[in-house]
Every structure is written in structure tokens, then in C-alpha cells.
Amino acid sequence: MSAAAPAPLPLYREGLAFYEEVANELRRLVEAVNALALASGLSGDQLVEWAPGRSIGVIRKEYPSTEIRSDLEFEHWGPVIKVSIRGHQEEDLPFYPEDLEIPVGVDLDDNVVAIFGEGKSLTAHELACYLAQSLRRCFPGMVLPCKTCGNA
Image 1 (cartoon, one colour):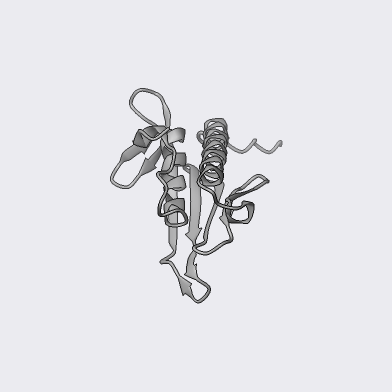
Image 2 (cartoon, helix red, strand yellow):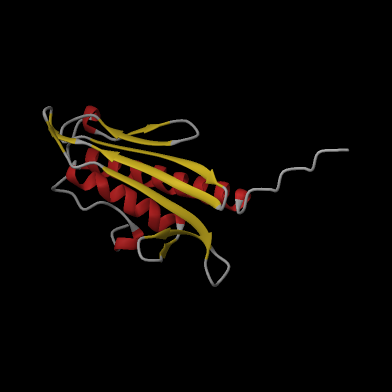
């Protein structure tokens, strides 16, 4: 008797593609924030770093600091983007941490979306903009570039 093949994970390919799109959009936004920071006269050590790898990593080490870490995980019912946002105003003064679990699903128009809060759906670009807005505390005098917000 042969063993039955395990059932495929729901939305596996769609979740991978969506997460890759979020990562690409967020990387583009980080580059835009850095360009704006340099144009505003900030030095290179005050910029935001992109941590390469399978997970999303966005880090600004200079105070006020911010670290956005994200990974795609698969539950039995589908993909979930898990996000951790940490930071410090000063060395011994942390910001309130945020931990998010954002399911990925398909909306009524058959678009792959992040399901946020009370059923609000976000495109990959909108989710990247939402995550990038965590950097605003690092650059209080700058308007962060984001098409969703009308600033790009």
C-alpha cells in the first residue's frame, strides 16, 4: 500500500508571490526614504538598511531607531505574514513593540490580498506602505514617499 501524498497548502504559490511583491515594494520605499534623507542633509550612518535574505528586514540603527522584521509562514488554512516592529527613542527608551499576524487570502475580485484588522484588504503595495510608515518616527521632519498616501 502506498502512502497518499499530503494535500497541498492552500494559496501556497499565491502567498509566496504576494510576499515577494511586498518585499520588493518595501525595498523600493526604503531606497526612496534613504534618497530623501540624503537630500535632506542626513549622513549615511543615519540611513535605513535593508537586511537581505528570505525574511524582510528593515533596520535603522541610529536613534530614534526602528527595526521591522517579517516572515511568511504557512498555517494549515493558508499563508500568514508575521511582522515584528521594534525601536528606541533613545538607548534606554524603547517604543511600544508591535507584533502583527496578517493572513493572506483572495478577495471577491480574485485578487491576492493581505487581510488586515476588521476584514480590510491591502494590496502588496499598500501593506509595504503601511510597514514603511513605521519609519516616520526616525525622520520626524520628512514626509515619507508612498503612493498610497499621495507622497510619491
